[in-house]
Image 1 (cartoon, each protein chain N blue to C red):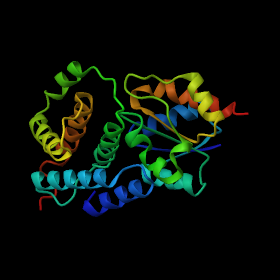
Image 2 (cartoon, rainbow over the protein chains, first blue to last red):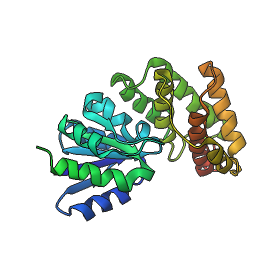
Image 3 (cartoon, each protein chain N blue to C red):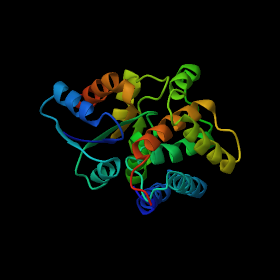
Image 4 (spheres, helix red, strand yellow):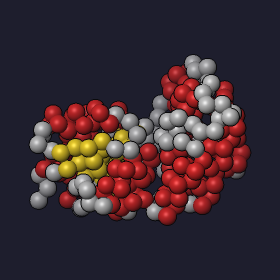
Length: 119
Length: 126
């Protein structure tokens, strides 16, 4: 599995957390634009990004490049990540995930576990 | 980031139907105003603000709301020496947008403007 890390904030922390969960996952950190382009050109399987509001800076470029139907806002200010919603998004074929930087520690494990358990 | 870099980014968002033409131009003009205010040719680390801003404008158009403890957040924001300058930039945006932005959105915009202003004040003078 190859994950590209885009968005605007917490990129190194996100990469470290992914590696902590599963060191076999290949990760690459890029700008939001380059990360979205990597998804478009199928150089990565999944996109993770964070910003302060979860949808804007985290996902805007990914939405533009691969389409809204492939993207999921996992959390927003005042809306914590939800395990069932993340699992449903993964099962429904979402490949790009955005969340707020302060929800990183909850959102990343949820997303990674859901991706690994994808049927 | 200079005006051409921003235009390229916004063009991608426009073509991807993430933003409207109105949002495209409002964002572009907000960037130009900030360049003029700071007397800069380009702004360092402005991508986050100028990706957040068009997303926020679209969010408001859709009537989506952010949940944020506004009073506590504003207490923090007001401590910045650049708060008044950030507030002025947001007010000018509001004027052009033609309405009052929700307070939650304004707080985030203040935070982003303050960050960009503090990073760029005193650098690359035009």
